[in-house]
Length: 217
Picture: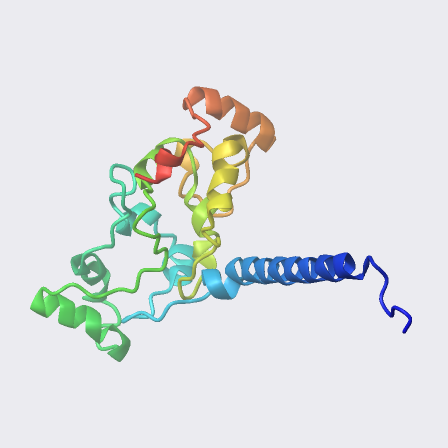
């Protein structure tokens, strides 16, 4: 009986199996990366449900409140801090005093129990981030939080992936602004950003920190 398969058939079959496995593994890896980097997985642009539907668009955009009026520690601590209820009551003891929406605020003030806000920018425990050093080096609130003055509810603007952080650490001149403009929304530099950034890198002694232990401590 004549031989059906050539002598190279076994080698071809083995190579085909290996290639098929590599294709499946590569496709699975690509799919995983696609999902992991998606807005769904990173929760980018997803407004969080809060006990009180606080509107930055109203308080910052319309009323013009400075970020530091509520987030008082951004210039001297590693966390931004949330305002105590007394800060809210400064205004809301006079306006919207009967609003059902603000009852959690009034209850917090009466009972001296903090409102349990939902954290929007929730970094993993293994990531260290210091607000004060970024503010001191001229990184604007808008750089990380986007146009917070246009957000009726608060959502996460960047995806917070490590490559997003590294882009700024590797190219800080693209993102720096004068310290007195850190909280300015819609900031437009008075000179080309490349020129301004290069000058501020030197003036503010900005280092291009890329070592693992800069953020992972």
